[in-house]
Length: 489
Image 1 (cartoon, rainbow, N blue to C red):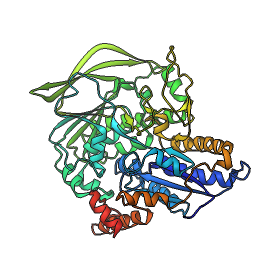
Image 2: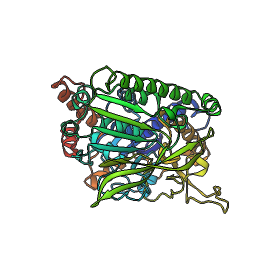
Image 3: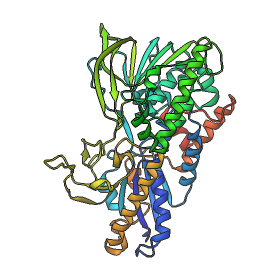
Image 4: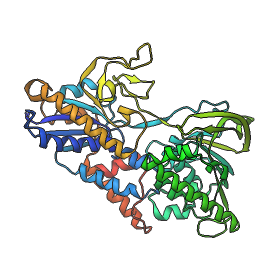
């Protein structure tokens, strides 16, 4: 047995939240460790249930986001660190338990993401042809356990949602398959599926107004450059009052988004004036309608299948409050996709805050609590903190915020972890089993074969070689058994 004096940290989830937290922990420990009486040495073991790392970056974002390559590259550089040990294909709660981790690690940090959609909650939500965004995203991103085929026979489709995921879903439904293949890493089954897509009309419904949407400017710019697609807007939606314009101007990102939406309004007018063309002036064979202040109230069906959607016009005040107007309109559609939010994953043995949709943690500081409690007035009540357990990213705050929020989260949680470790006995080294090879023996005894960083690099090299054959940078492997075979070769 090899005893070591380094701090030992287990991180559950190798997506952005887990990787950033691992990196920030090591950096902050080197900077502050001596002063806190912790020293500067630590080993971080990063556990991921999928055969490959990067979580949301690889499997939660549309393949045609240009920035994703840079994020994935930065995450990979972080993982190429001798103090970080990657254990992919190891599922928490199944392959290893919480007690077994606490026996071997001084602290456990949960950076689990979100895999389930929030339910739509409208009449008709159970009809054939209603889909949650999460499963569709899994399909087009080649999620290892996701669907391999997707029904794309509907000629008219609706997408519900006012955020980036709704924009991703709508864009992929309007995508030209050859254009998408040329610039992304999509696998063959996704290319064939999108090539056979029958959608010619798409309606995007956003409940609030132009100034309250949650789109990033990058999403809007990608929407502007869809070959063969005519954008269509309702000019009345852009008739903003002075209070709304003033409120939107207070926040830089909101102001930029609104300015970009006005650019899209002008584009849409030009597309119509030029004879229903796309952004390059070519004849458009698909129409993409953007409806603000439009709240779907019912999915309409016949014989158990979607035939339409009923939408109520809304009004949104400058402070973002939405009110109903009692004015309804129906649109013929044969499929409805809802992107109204995710529900972050639960973790066996950890309390879940259903009200806020995240792992129960104290006042949002990332320290895991024994329960999620609310006072009689609905305010959060003080609850007992569970020592040595933490949450970050969506597991800590719920399904809100982008990469920037995840980084600031990680710094907050790492600061709290170091503070707690410095107060613990023996300089934070509290795990009973300090043999770094103990976890490997435990997993081996259960027949679990983790995929480490070197194994991931083999998968990545194969994907790059397959992409090169088609003049592409990368081509995703989607079969988990093939991933395992490549990694362990």
